[in-house]
Amino acid sequence: SSGINAEWPLRPGITFPRDKMVPLLKVLLLQVTLVFGVHSQILRFPTATSVNDYIALKPDFSSIKSGYTVCSWVKPSSSGRDSFYFSYAKGGAHNTLLVGSSRTHCFLSKCQDRYAFSNILLPGNWYYQCLSWKSGDKVRHYINAVEGSLKNNVAVGGSLPLGGTLVIGQDQDKEGGGFVAKQAYSGDLYELNVFKKQLSLAEISELYFRGRCARVNQENVALSWSRILSEARHGNIKDVDDACVASDVSALLSGNC
Image (cartoon, rainbow, N blue to C red; front, side, top):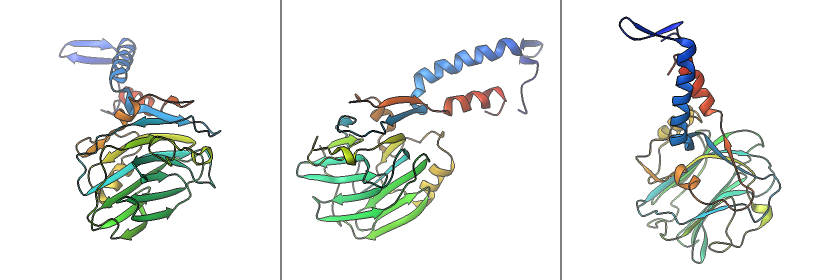
């Protein structure tokens, strides 16, 4: 449709005034948002970092066999330091998987294989960051669907250990703790998902170019953003509504959705 007329036809011969339909649609959209509101929910970590701001959970990674991909929209509020927002630890392997906005580390197979990627994300800007691994292939790192670095034959024959602890917003120096304030993440996170396979460049490009407000197909997701949002927050993490719902409203009222 090219837009909304003064009256909307409900069925032949019956119309409904636009000025009454618009408020009705807004109410309906609000109800949808209350049910599916995680689509527009950002986690905002304080600019002044501390060891108190984090989310901890026990994810079920049993569906991950020989590869995975971690992707997230990130908007850091600072730069020039080690800052990590995803830390998965199991027992003595406290750096099993570590993803950050200033450096990205991948440690697998109880730290026998490790590789550090250097990347600087400028404060105040949104980026789509992905780290992927497949046994016998490569560790790949992407910023905005551009492959920035890779390493061959990392943790060949290894697998992501099950039963570990995932912490969002801090770097674990021991499973479930050992946080250091200067390594804490500061800024926004949105749509952080762990996929149960190594996504291809084409798949990551599709996620990126569809835009930040697009829904993520859950078919290959081992850990979803909605699961992360359902966990208890510690410290001063804020839940912030994104502009995605407002964009949905505008599209709906203009007849473009």
